[in-house]
Each structure stands twice: as C-alpha cells, then as structure tokens.
Length: 91
Image (cartoon, rainbow, N blue to C red; front, side, top):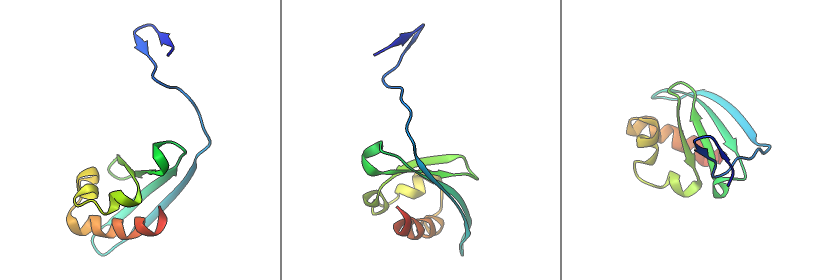
C-alpha cells in the first residue's frame, strides 16, 4: 500500500473499459443510462443513471433480487421493471 499525506491507497490502477450509452422511453419513464463493463466487480457491470446521478454494480443475479433496482436507483416498481427487462438483455 502506498501512502500520500493523510491518504492510504488500497488500490490505484487504470484499465480499458467498454461503455455503452443508452436512452430509451418506456411506458413508465425515460431511461438514460451508461453501462460500464470492467474486469473488476467479479463480472458485474457498473450501471449509471445519467438523469439522477445514481449508480449500482449490477450482475444477472442482482436483477432477480427483489427491490434491488428500486432501492439503488430510487425507482417505483414499474419503472424498475422496465429497466430490469432491458438489463436482462444487455448485461
């Protein structure tokens, strides 16, 4: 571990990532998201809601977890159902 002043870095590295930007209008809401694929997080993707500035690390199993997207993105069940349906196809 390296130290700098009052900071102790647990890790500090760079990597190439794949980022996909998607905007779609569902029945319940507009969804503007970025999906970042990385080698970190055990194969999960970083999903960023561009409109609300909320993000979550999401894998296929997380999509099956009740309330996961609702809580992470502060969405209604109906809004999260739309996003979940889309994410099943993309991550």
